[in-house]
Length: 429
Image (cartoon, rainbow, N blue to C red):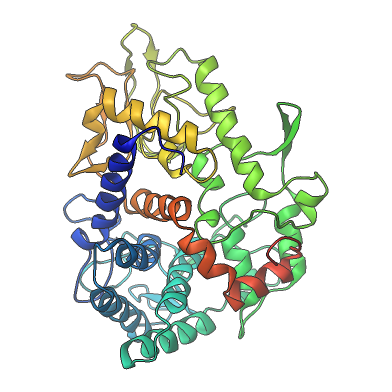
Protein backbone atom coordinates (compact mmCIF):
# COMPACT_ATOMS: atom_id res chain seq x y z
CA UNK A 1 0.00 0.00 0.00
CA UNK A 2 1.20 3.46 -0.92
CA UNK A 3 1.15 5.35 2.37
CA UNK A 4 3.56 8.16 3.11
CA UNK A 5 3.98 7.08 6.73
CA UNK A 6 2.33 5.36 9.66
CA UNK A 7 0.21 8.46 10.25
CA UNK A 8 -1.53 7.83 6.91
CA UNK A 9 -2.24 4.24 7.92
CA UNK A 10 -3.72 5.39 11.22
CA UNK A 11 -5.83 7.99 9.42
CA UNK A 12 -7.11 5.40 6.96
CA UNK A 13 -7.98 2.97 9.76
CA UNK A 14 -9.86 5.66 11.63
CA UNK A 15 -11.85 6.92 8.66
CA UNK A 16 -12.76 3.44 7.43
CA UNK A 17 -13.84 2.28 10.87
CA UNK A 18 -15.91 5.42 11.43
CA UNK A 19 -17.57 4.99 8.04
CA UNK A 20 -18.32 1.37 8.93
CA UNK A 21 -19.80 2.43 12.27
CA UNK A 22 -22.48 4.39 10.40
CA UNK A 23 -24.12 1.05 9.55
CA UNK A 24 -24.27 0.17 13.23
CA UNK A 25 -25.21 3.59 14.58
CA UNK A 26 -27.96 4.26 12.02
CA UNK A 27 -29.49 0.80 11.64
CA UNK A 28 -32.83 -0.37 12.99
CA UNK A 29 -31.95 -3.65 14.73
CA UNK A 30 -35.56 -4.83 14.40
CA UNK A 31 -35.57 -4.93 10.59
CA UNK A 32 -32.01 -4.18 9.49
CA UNK A 33 -32.90 -1.02 7.57
CA UNK A 34 -30.20 1.67 7.31
CA UNK A 35 -31.03 5.37 7.51
CA UNK A 36 -30.43 7.49 4.44
CA UNK A 37 -28.63 10.14 6.49
CA UNK A 38 -27.64 10.87 10.07
CA UNK A 39 -30.42 13.44 10.51
CA UNK A 40 -32.99 12.52 13.13
CA UNK A 41 -36.12 11.14 11.52
CA UNK A 42 -34.47 10.30 8.20
CA UNK A 43 -36.07 7.39 6.33
CA UNK A 44 -34.22 4.32 5.24
CA UNK A 45 -32.56 4.28 1.84
CA UNK A 46 -32.62 0.84 0.25
CA UNK A 47 -29.30 1.64 -1.46
CA UNK A 48 -27.71 2.54 1.88
CA UNK A 49 -29.09 -0.75 3.22
CA UNK A 50 -27.36 -2.54 0.34
CA UNK A 51 -24.10 -0.83 1.19
CA UNK A 52 -24.61 -1.85 4.82
CA UNK A 53 -25.04 -5.50 3.88
CA UNK A 54 -21.81 -5.21 1.90
CA UNK A 55 -19.96 -3.39 4.67
CA UNK A 56 -20.56 -6.02 7.36
CA UNK A 57 -18.01 -8.48 5.88
CA UNK A 58 -15.36 -5.74 5.94
CA UNK A 59 -16.21 -5.10 9.58
CA UNK A 60 -15.72 -8.78 10.38
CA UNK A 61 -12.41 -8.96 8.53
CA UNK A 62 -11.15 -5.81 10.29
CA UNK A 63 -12.24 -7.03 13.72
CA UNK A 64 -14.86 -4.33 14.25
CA UNK A 65 -17.75 -6.80 14.44
CA UNK A 66 -17.99 -10.50 15.14
CA UNK A 67 -19.01 -12.83 12.34
CA UNK A 68 -21.94 -13.97 14.48
CA UNK A 69 -23.20 -10.39 14.92
CA UNK A 70 -22.75 -9.58 11.24
CA UNK A 71 -24.61 -12.75 10.21
CA UNK A 72 -27.44 -11.99 12.62
CA UNK A 73 -27.82 -8.43 11.32
CA UNK A 74 -27.73 -9.67 7.75
CA UNK A 75 -30.32 -12.36 8.39
CA UNK A 76 -32.65 -9.84 10.06
CA UNK A 77 -32.40 -7.59 7.00
CA UNK A 78 -32.99 -10.37 4.48
CA UNK A 79 -35.94 -11.76 6.44
CA UNK A 80 -37.51 -8.30 6.49
CA UNK A 81 -37.31 -7.92 2.71
CA UNK A 82 -38.45 -11.49 2.14
CA UNK A 83 -41.55 -10.97 4.29
CA UNK A 84 -42.31 -7.34 3.38
CA UNK A 85 -45.40 -6.42 1.38
CA UNK A 86 -45.00 -6.70 -2.41
CA UNK A 87 -48.03 -5.18 -4.14
CA UNK A 88 -49.38 -2.19 -6.07
CA UNK A 89 -50.49 -0.67 -2.76
CA UNK A 90 -49.02 2.84 -2.49
CA UNK A 91 -47.72 2.06 1.00
CA UNK A 92 -46.15 -1.31 0.23
CA UNK A 93 -42.42 -1.96 0.59
CA UNK A 94 -42.06 -2.95 -3.03
CA UNK A 95 -43.58 -4.42 -6.16
CA UNK A 96 -42.44 -7.03 -8.67
CA UNK A 97 -39.54 -7.96 -6.40
CA UNK A 98 -38.17 -4.40 -6.54
CA UNK A 99 -38.31 -1.78 -3.81
CA UNK A 100 -39.19 1.82 -3.12
CA UNK A 101 -36.25 4.20 -2.83
CA UNK A 102 -37.13 5.35 0.69
CA UNK A 103 -38.80 3.29 3.40
CA UNK A 104 -40.01 4.22 6.86
CA UNK A 105 -37.31 3.15 9.30
CA UNK A 106 -39.80 1.50 11.67
CA UNK A 107 -42.55 0.08 9.46
CA UNK A 108 -40.47 -0.55 6.35
CA UNK A 109 -43.22 0.88 4.14
CA UNK A 110 -42.86 3.37 1.29
CA UNK A 111 -42.33 6.96 2.39
CA UNK A 112 -41.77 10.42 0.84
CA UNK A 113 -43.93 9.28 -2.13
CA UNK A 114 -40.73 7.80 -3.46
CA UNK A 115 -40.40 5.83 -6.68
CA UNK A 116 -39.90 2.12 -7.09
CA UNK A 117 -36.23 2.55 -7.97
CA UNK A 118 -34.37 0.28 -10.38
CA UNK A 119 -30.87 1.45 -9.48
CA UNK A 120 -31.47 1.53 -5.74
CA UNK A 121 -33.01 -1.94 -5.89
CA UNK A 122 -29.89 -3.07 -7.76
CA UNK A 123 -27.59 -1.63 -5.10
CA UNK A 124 -29.67 -3.35 -2.42
CA UNK A 125 -29.49 -6.69 -4.24
CA UNK A 126 -25.76 -6.25 -4.84
CA UNK A 127 -25.47 -6.10 -1.05
CA UNK A 128 -27.68 -9.18 -0.71
CA UNK A 129 -25.46 -11.12 -3.12
CA UNK A 130 -22.32 -9.90 -1.34
CA UNK A 131 -23.70 -11.29 1.91
CA UNK A 132 -24.45 -14.62 0.24
CA UNK A 133 -20.89 -14.80 -1.12
CA UNK A 134 -19.31 -14.01 2.25
CA UNK A 135 -21.47 -16.09 4.58
CA UNK A 136 -20.55 -19.44 3.05
CA UNK A 137 -20.23 -21.64 6.13
CA UNK A 138 -22.25 -24.76 6.71
CA UNK A 139 -24.37 -23.60 9.62
CA UNK A 140 -28.06 -22.79 10.01
CA UNK A 141 -27.80 -18.99 10.02
CA UNK A 142 -25.45 -18.67 7.07
CA UNK A 143 -27.37 -21.27 5.07
CA UNK A 144 -30.57 -19.26 5.56
CA UNK A 145 -28.76 -16.09 4.43
CA UNK A 146 -27.81 -17.81 1.18
CA UNK A 147 -31.28 -19.24 0.68
CA UNK A 148 -33.00 -15.89 1.22
CA UNK A 149 -30.48 -14.15 -1.02
CA UNK A 150 -31.24 -16.57 -3.83
CA UNK A 151 -34.98 -15.99 -3.40
CA UNK A 152 -34.74 -12.19 -3.27
CA UNK A 153 -32.58 -12.07 -6.37
CA UNK A 154 -34.79 -14.49 -8.28
CA UNK A 155 -37.92 -12.52 -7.34
CA UNK A 156 -36.70 -9.22 -8.85
CA UNK A 157 -38.60 -8.74 -12.11
CA UNK A 158 -36.18 -6.63 -14.14
CA UNK A 159 -37.83 -7.60 -17.43
CA UNK A 160 -41.09 -5.94 -16.31
CA UNK A 161 -39.19 -2.63 -16.07
CA UNK A 162 -38.43 -2.73 -19.79
CA UNK A 163 -42.14 -2.28 -20.54
CA UNK A 164 -41.67 -3.61 -24.05
CA UNK A 165 -38.73 -1.34 -24.88
CA UNK A 166 -34.97 -1.95 -24.95
CA UNK A 167 -33.48 0.11 -22.09
CA UNK A 168 -34.70 -0.13 -18.49
CA UNK A 169 -36.93 2.58 -17.05
CA UNK A 170 -35.50 4.57 -14.12
CA UNK A 171 -38.42 3.70 -11.89
CA UNK A 172 -42.17 3.44 -11.37
CA UNK A 173 -44.90 4.91 -9.17
CA UNK A 174 -48.16 3.17 -8.27
CA UNK A 175 -50.43 5.96 -9.49
CA UNK A 176 -48.59 7.36 -12.50
CA UNK A 177 -46.64 4.35 -13.77
CA UNK A 178 -43.11 4.39 -15.17
CA UNK A 179 -40.98 7.52 -14.82
CA UNK A 180 -40.30 9.40 -18.08
CA UNK A 181 -36.62 8.47 -18.43
CA UNK A 182 -34.62 5.32 -19.11
CA UNK A 183 -31.17 4.09 -18.09
CA UNK A 184 -29.39 5.14 -21.27
CA UNK A 185 -25.82 6.55 -21.52
CA UNK A 186 -22.93 5.95 -19.11
CA UNK A 187 -23.94 5.97 -15.46
CA UNK A 188 -23.80 3.99 -12.25
CA UNK A 189 -26.26 1.56 -13.85
CA UNK A 190 -23.71 -1.00 -15.09
CA UNK A 191 -24.33 -2.98 -11.89
CA UNK A 192 -28.08 -2.78 -12.59
CA UNK A 193 -27.70 -4.17 -16.10
CA UNK A 194 -25.32 -6.92 -14.97
CA UNK A 195 -27.80 -8.13 -12.34
CA UNK A 196 -30.75 -7.88 -14.74
CA UNK A 197 -28.94 -9.76 -17.51
CA UNK A 198 -27.99 -12.59 -15.13
CA UNK A 199 -31.42 -13.05 -13.55
CA UNK A 200 -32.49 -16.70 -13.29
CA UNK A 201 -36.18 -15.74 -13.45
CA UNK A 202 -36.75 -12.44 -15.25
CA UNK A 203 -33.66 -11.71 -17.36
CA UNK A 204 -33.33 -8.91 -19.87
CA UNK A 205 -31.51 -9.46 -23.14
CA UNK A 206 -28.20 -8.27 -24.56
CA UNK A 207 -30.08 -5.74 -26.69
CA UNK A 208 -30.99 -3.86 -23.50
CA UNK A 209 -27.36 -3.46 -22.49
CA UNK A 210 -26.51 -2.41 -26.04
CA UNK A 211 -29.24 0.25 -25.86
CA UNK A 212 -27.71 1.51 -22.61
CA UNK A 213 -24.22 1.70 -24.15
CA UNK A 214 -25.36 3.13 -27.47
CA UNK A 215 -25.63 6.63 -26.05
CA UNK A 216 -22.22 6.78 -24.37
CA UNK A 217 -20.53 10.17 -24.74
CA UNK A 218 -16.79 10.07 -25.43
CA UNK A 219 -14.25 12.89 -25.20
CA UNK A 220 -10.46 13.11 -25.28
CA UNK A 221 -8.47 13.74 -22.09
CA UNK A 222 -4.67 13.97 -22.17
CA UNK A 223 -4.79 12.47 -25.66
CA UNK A 224 -6.71 9.46 -24.33
CA UNK A 225 -10.36 8.45 -24.81
CA UNK A 226 -12.57 9.30 -21.84
CA UNK A 227 -16.13 8.07 -21.34
CA UNK A 228 -17.80 11.14 -19.93
CA UNK A 229 -19.85 11.43 -16.76
CA UNK A 230 -19.57 14.57 -14.67
CA UNK A 231 -20.35 13.49 -11.07
CA UNK A 232 -17.57 11.41 -9.55
CA UNK A 233 -19.87 8.86 -7.90
CA UNK A 234 -20.91 7.55 -11.33
CA UNK A 235 -17.32 6.41 -11.87
CA UNK A 236 -17.27 4.61 -8.51
CA UNK A 237 -20.51 2.88 -7.55
CA UNK A 238 -20.53 -0.16 -9.86
CA UNK A 239 -16.79 -0.54 -9.20
CA UNK A 240 -17.44 -1.18 -5.51
CA UNK A 241 -18.61 -4.70 -6.42
CA UNK A 242 -17.17 -5.36 -9.87
CA UNK A 243 -13.45 -5.55 -10.61
CA UNK A 244 -13.27 -3.96 -14.06
CA UNK A 245 -9.48 -4.28 -14.36
CA UNK A 246 -8.60 -5.91 -17.66
CA UNK A 247 -12.14 -6.81 -18.75
CA UNK A 248 -13.89 -5.05 -21.60
CA UNK A 249 -17.25 -4.84 -23.27
CA UNK A 250 -17.72 -3.83 -26.91
CA UNK A 251 -17.99 -0.11 -26.12
CA UNK A 252 -14.68 0.28 -24.27
CA UNK A 253 -12.84 -2.29 -26.38
CA UNK A 254 -13.52 -0.12 -29.43
CA UNK A 255 -11.61 2.69 -27.67
CA UNK A 256 -8.83 0.39 -26.41
CA UNK A 257 -9.56 1.12 -22.74
CA UNK A 258 -11.58 -0.33 -19.85
CA UNK A 259 -13.86 1.01 -17.14
CA UNK A 260 -11.17 0.92 -14.44
CA UNK A 261 -8.84 3.03 -16.56
CA UNK A 262 -11.75 5.32 -17.37
CA UNK A 263 -12.27 6.01 -13.67
CA UNK A 264 -8.56 6.80 -13.36
CA UNK A 265 -9.05 9.37 -16.12
CA UNK A 266 -12.16 10.75 -14.38
CA UNK A 267 -9.99 11.45 -11.33
CA UNK A 268 -7.44 13.21 -13.54
CA UNK A 269 -10.27 15.29 -15.03
CA UNK A 270 -11.42 16.27 -11.55
CA UNK A 271 -7.92 17.27 -10.46
CA UNK A 272 -7.14 19.16 -13.67
CA UNK A 273 -10.43 21.02 -13.34
CA UNK A 274 -9.71 21.92 -9.71
CA UNK A 275 -6.22 23.16 -10.60
CA UNK A 276 -7.57 25.28 -13.46
CA UNK A 277 -10.47 26.41 -11.22
CA UNK A 278 -12.50 28.24 -13.88
CA UNK A 279 -15.01 29.39 -11.26
CA UNK A 280 -12.27 30.86 -9.00
CA UNK A 281 -13.64 29.04 -5.96
CA UNK A 282 -11.77 28.97 -2.65
CA UNK A 283 -9.33 26.15 -1.97
CA UNK A 284 -9.59 24.33 -5.30
CA UNK A 285 -6.39 22.64 -6.39
CA UNK A 286 -4.58 19.33 -6.86
CA UNK A 287 -5.42 18.42 -3.24
CA UNK A 288 -8.97 19.79 -3.06
CA UNK A 289 -11.38 18.22 -5.52
CA UNK A 290 -14.45 16.00 -5.47
CA UNK A 291 -17.40 17.22 -7.54
CA UNK A 292 -20.30 14.81 -7.31
CA UNK A 293 -23.98 14.59 -6.42
CA UNK A 294 -24.40 16.14 -2.99
CA UNK A 295 -26.19 18.81 -0.98
CA UNK A 296 -25.13 22.43 -1.23
CA UNK A 297 -26.29 25.88 -0.13
CA UNK A 298 -29.92 26.56 -0.94
CA UNK A 299 -30.22 30.26 -1.76
CA UNK A 300 -28.21 32.83 -3.73
CA UNK A 301 -25.57 34.51 -1.59
CA UNK A 302 -22.28 36.36 -1.79
CA UNK A 303 -19.01 34.49 -1.75
CA UNK A 304 -15.95 35.42 0.25
CA UNK A 305 -14.62 37.47 -2.68
CA UNK A 306 -17.87 39.44 -2.93
CA UNK A 307 -19.33 37.73 -6.01
CA UNK A 308 -23.01 36.82 -6.06
CA UNK A 309 -23.44 33.05 -6.58
CA UNK A 310 -26.54 31.06 -7.42
CA UNK A 311 -27.04 27.84 -5.43
CA UNK A 312 -29.47 25.00 -5.98
CA UNK A 313 -29.17 22.79 -2.91
CA UNK A 314 -28.87 19.16 -3.95
CA UNK A 315 -27.29 18.88 -7.40
CA UNK A 316 -25.31 16.47 -9.56
CA UNK A 317 -22.13 18.55 -9.56
CA UNK A 318 -19.43 17.44 -11.95
CA UNK A 319 -16.29 18.15 -13.96
CA UNK A 320 -15.34 19.46 -16.43
CA UNK A 321 -18.72 20.81 -17.60
CA UNK A 322 -20.32 21.45 -14.21
CA UNK A 323 -22.51 22.37 -12.62
CA UNK A 324 -20.08 23.78 -10.08
CA UNK A 325 -20.75 26.26 -7.30
CA UNK A 326 -17.73 25.62 -5.09
CA UNK A 327 -19.34 22.73 -3.18
CA UNK A 328 -17.02 19.78 -2.55
CA UNK A 329 -17.69 16.26 -1.23
CA UNK A 330 -14.85 15.76 1.28
CA UNK A 331 -15.16 11.95 1.23
CA UNK A 332 -14.87 11.67 -2.56
CA UNK A 333 -11.06 11.70 -2.95
CA UNK A 334 -10.65 8.90 -0.41
CA UNK A 335 -13.24 6.80 -2.26
CA UNK A 336 -10.86 6.97 -5.25
CA UNK A 337 -8.13 5.12 -3.35
CA UNK A 338 -7.94 1.99 -5.55
CA UNK A 339 -7.59 4.07 -8.71
CA UNK A 340 -5.07 6.76 -7.74
CA UNK A 341 -3.73 6.10 -4.21
CA UNK A 342 -1.28 8.99 -4.23
CA UNK A 343 -3.89 11.58 -5.24
CA UNK A 344 -6.51 10.13 -2.87
CA UNK A 345 -4.26 10.13 0.19
CA UNK A 346 -2.80 13.56 -0.57
CA UNK A 347 -6.21 15.18 -0.96
CA UNK A 348 -7.61 13.43 2.12
CA UNK A 349 -4.65 14.56 4.20
CA UNK A 350 -5.18 18.15 3.01
CA UNK A 351 -8.94 18.13 3.65
CA UNK A 352 -8.70 16.63 7.13
CA UNK A 353 -5.85 18.96 8.14
CA UNK A 354 -7.19 22.22 6.74
CA UNK A 355 -10.94 21.69 7.00
CA UNK A 356 -11.38 19.66 10.21
CA UNK A 357 -15.04 20.63 10.49
CA UNK A 358 -15.92 18.22 7.68
CA UNK A 359 -15.45 15.39 10.20
CA UNK A 360 -18.23 14.79 12.72
CA UNK A 361 -18.53 11.71 14.95
CA UNK A 362 -15.29 10.62 13.29
CA UNK A 363 -16.80 10.42 9.79
CA UNK A 364 -17.09 12.73 6.80
CA UNK A 365 -20.09 14.99 6.42
CA UNK A 366 -21.65 14.97 2.99
CA UNK A 367 -20.29 18.25 1.59
CA UNK A 368 -18.90 21.70 2.30
CA UNK A 369 -18.31 24.96 0.45
CA UNK A 370 -15.26 26.99 1.56
CA UNK A 371 -16.15 29.82 -0.85
CA UNK A 372 -19.17 30.76 1.28
CA UNK A 373 -18.42 33.07 4.25
CA UNK A 374 -18.81 31.23 7.54
CA UNK A 375 -17.56 31.10 11.10
CA UNK A 376 -14.88 28.59 10.15
CA UNK A 377 -12.65 27.89 7.15
CA UNK A 378 -15.11 25.25 5.94
CA UNK A 379 -17.60 28.02 5.01
CA UNK A 380 -20.96 26.38 4.34
CA UNK A 381 -21.10 22.93 5.94
CA UNK A 382 -23.58 20.12 5.40
CA UNK A 383 -25.26 19.07 8.63
CA UNK A 384 -25.37 15.34 8.01
CA UNK A 385 -23.47 12.25 7.01
CA UNK A 386 -24.91 10.21 4.16
CA UNK A 387 -25.18 6.43 4.14
CA UNK A 388 -24.17 6.06 0.48
CA UNK A 389 -20.99 8.08 1.09
CA UNK A 390 -20.01 5.94 4.07
CA UNK A 391 -20.72 2.73 2.18
CA UNK A 392 -18.62 3.56 -0.85
CA UNK A 393 -15.79 4.57 1.50
CA UNK A 394 -15.86 1.27 3.40
CA UNK A 395 -15.89 -0.76 0.21
CA UNK A 396 -13.32 1.18 -1.80
CA UNK A 397 -10.87 1.42 1.08
CA UNK A 398 -11.22 -2.33 1.60
CA UNK A 399 -10.82 -3.09 -2.09
CA UNK A 400 -7.57 -1.14 -1.99
CA UNK A 401 -6.30 -2.69 1.23
CA UNK A 402 -7.26 -6.34 0.74
CA UNK A 403 -9.32 -6.72 -2.46
CA UNK A 404 -12.07 -8.29 -0.33
CA UNK A 405 -15.10 -7.43 -2.46
CA UNK A 406 -13.41 -7.74 -5.83
CA UNK A 407 -11.92 -11.11 -4.87
CA UNK A 408 -15.27 -12.46 -3.61
CA UNK A 409 -17.39 -11.26 -6.47
CA UNK A 410 -15.01 -12.36 -9.22
CA UNK A 411 -16.12 -15.82 -8.09
CA UNK A 412 -19.83 -14.95 -8.08
CA UNK A 413 -21.76 -16.91 -10.74
CA UNK A 414 -24.21 -14.01 -10.97
CA UNK A 415 -21.58 -11.36 -11.65
CA UNK A 416 -19.72 -13.56 -14.10
CA UNK A 417 -22.90 -14.52 -15.97
CA UNK A 418 -24.13 -10.92 -16.14
CA UNK A 419 -20.82 -9.58 -17.41
CA UNK A 420 -20.54 -12.26 -20.07
CA UNK A 421 -24.11 -11.64 -21.25
CA UNK A 422 -23.23 -7.93 -21.54
CA UNK A 423 -20.35 -8.90 -23.80
CA UNK A 424 -17.45 -8.52 -21.40
CA UNK A 425 -14.39 -10.67 -21.96
CA UNK A 426 -10.68 -10.89 -21.15
CA UNK A 427 -8.80 -10.66 -17.86
CA UNK A 428 -10.22 -12.64 -14.96
CA UNK A 429 -13.34 -13.59 -16.97
